[in-house]
Image (cartoon, rainbow, N blue to C red):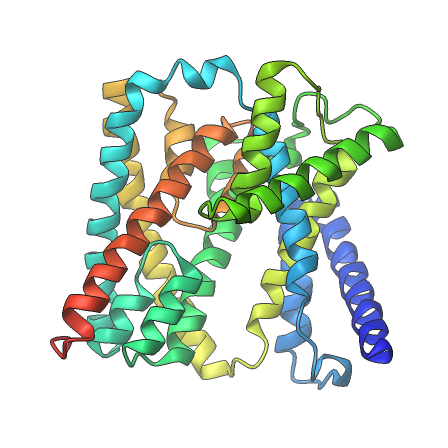
Length: 361
């Protein structure tokens, strides 16, 4: 057992180090979110190249290691909760109603895309097209008889395509690099952090993670630390600011773990799945932009903040994008958590009353 554990540690350290090389190259190329995109691209190439890399044969990225950095992202988001967010409360019913309608329209549109263009059966198309709840989609899809291989790759590609193309698209739209590529950093992130401050940050992440799981919060690894850090920040008990290097490491670990999701996917399936994902993600982004424009006119909330709130990627990944753009990450995270909750509720109802009752054909 000890040898296996040490083997896992050394392999993970090597893979993260190689991902860091990709992140460094992406940083000097002035790409947005360089550490996440660079790490993702590096590990994706490692598992997709025809040359067999034997040390990856029995390797799976340790979930607990990734969870630690997701918890730190939660702390980052919590430190951005200010009284300004509370001032937006009167506008939230409008945006939450928009998210609810977005979930229904995105789900139906994606189902048509995967059925008509992809040739997927109805069950596989439904669960491949859910705009959130990655693990719930896979589990419910499996119980309903979906093609698990196609479903899994489409769900991971939804997140990967979004976190790759959204920052690039925003850079083109704004006419300049965005986020860390433009030199932007979070308030206080350029400060040096001592051991005591780093210890407080880690403690907030661990305690928040434990509390989130005990309270059965949605996405507890993110929401628990986020709520704890938000309470600490608003009360003035402690002033937590994550240093830039810690933010970069969190981006790198998330990116590396996503790139490894391509392991075991053959060329024809990958090409077809990427093409369908581009169509699906393009449809959802266009739908989200439409909602953002309408809600901006109603609420006055910045269009950029709304666009990221409606981009249906993973909560942690979209939160990193919001953090890198200083786009009110607490507001963005709130809407993504609501999107996932609504999607899971919708999936549960359809699974129970349609597919498990034999009416899905």
